[in-house]
Image 1 (cartoon, rainbow, N blue to C red):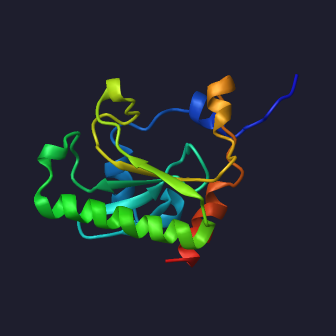
Image 2 (image 1 turned 135 degrees about the vertical axis):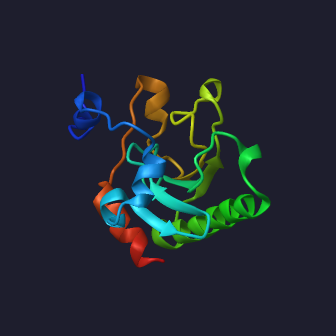
Length: 157
């Protein structure tokens, strides 16, 4: 039997969960690098997913705390999509992926891990990447630490 170790995950599994919404809390903090906030824009921001599906997995979220697309003003919707495009461009320059998964999970039934603060996912993909492991064994292999990925993407802004 082969084993893949991800010892950093145990901090999430066993650690105390901070109350409230991290998509509201993190942008209020002063340390963007510590919180993996890559880009701040007028009405939304881009943040590295701390538990990524793949290397470079970003989330683009409005500053407004809402679960509903319908609650966003037209300019907030436009900013969300414009920042998604900008992040795709940064990821392309920095990582040269073969493709992307871009989308939202709205509501628990749709797979939302954060139900009360809507956000867009942008996940770089490579031909032959290791995400097949999720299907085979409820496992993901992400080959680069978040601190290194953050530094790489910041260089390409």
